[in-house]
Length: 106
Image 1 (cartoon, rainbow, N blue to C red):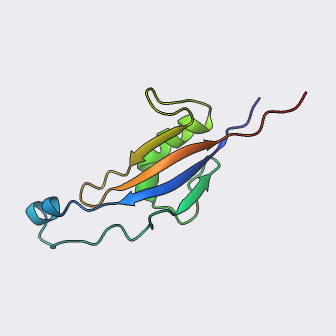
Image 2 (image 1 turned 120 degrees about the vertical axis):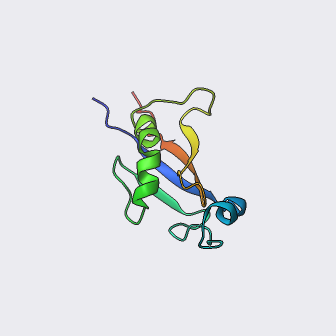
């Protein structure tokens, strides 16, 4: 049986919805997520990578596992997916990519 593939997780963009912060919080404006940096990369072997935000991991886990097990999302480049965490004030966007093993030579 083939083992699940590793999945590369790249932080694409940390964003802020300043209008939501202004209208729906009493704390003022918050900085973009401090857990990640744009361009930062992690690799998952089916588990949450060290140093990864547990809330963001819960949001993207199903997509990581789908890619790791050879699945693909409809309408998206094969072996990849773009998703984000569910922080409505400061969402972080991630690119997920299955790390394909080279085909074995006969």
